[in-house]
Length: 228
Image 1 (cartoon, rainbow, N blue to C red):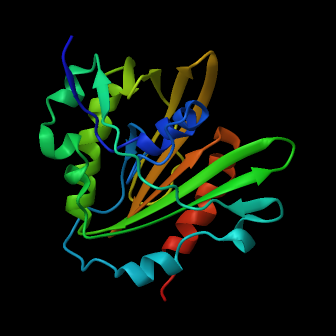
Image 2: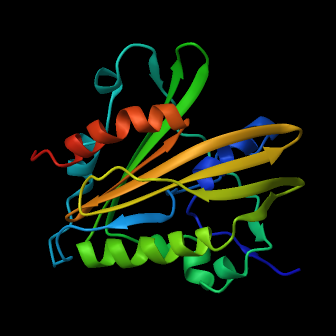
């Protein structure tokens, strides 16, 4: 069985499980899901937003409501993260596999812990580039993930069993993707939902507990569209 360095897509969700076994903080970027619907305008050339603009459009505690605490960014681990048993991801090649395939012009990200009835997490990534590049780059990786309904992710001595399942995406923006990721490691099982929406030259990705993702993806998109 061949191994290849895993794509950065989904690594934040993977680390939500790996953190339970001592492997937090590896992922530099993360994504959502498999394409569920395509519609809206045809991608055209638009200037990417600045990092400052993207950061201003991220959700914050006041947007989310009571019970949310911003999660500090964890230091990056040096352990290699590899995918086992997913030829579709391996075929994407080294650049995409190491994350540089998601080399969009601008990026901003934030994560929160929700201490309501139980401790849950939700995170948001914003990317900006030309609509065509956002669509082409993220779709290629999403399609590869959907092609592998089950595989493994290994980091150091930790091996996580992964499952992917297509999920219905909300009819928002120009393009939409969504999937459920199931992680099993160390006797623990976790389900993470990832929903991505492209609106013009901005890609919004919300990941975390399924209920929190469904609750906040609309407001994340609304804020991402705000002119600042």
